[in-house]
Length: 208
Image (cartoon, rainbow, N blue to C red):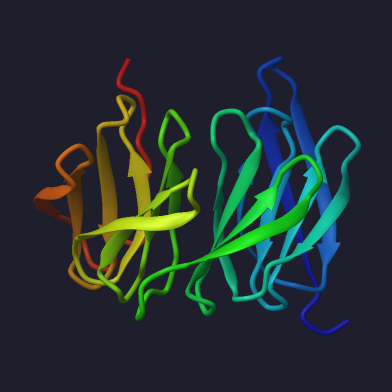
């Protein structure tokens, strides 16, 4: 079958047991994230604009959600009630009810935005979305499901990550070859840290 691809996810669950899910898909899997409450795995598949929900214990797909717009990344609040999916070509964030696996709404981002990375604040009240060539991070009020403000960062911002305190956001800026450090209280970029060429992803690891 054309464009057929096999992908495997390995999870280290809190109970210390590794789970494997091996699935044959016609579509390209771009990213995945684990619902912190249910343990379900959400996989974004860009070619047909779909998100798959996987039960890692049963090792099977339990839902397919049509988001459209070339889904890129997914993020959950700590209670796992919603899944927020950045849809690049649509310029919006798809909001999914993580219990019913139903698409609830689409939050449109400012003109010129190409949503890429997503992160949710610790209290779940804000969603941060990188806008790609929009060169900014959109701050979304999750109660109102609308953009509250945008914060200018480096060029072609892609991956984003929150620090453990939830007070700072770090963004990987692929075209300017740097990382922006953003203070979320003041909504300002504090500094840029030069790194290698083409930084697209970023993660924060505990130093403890």
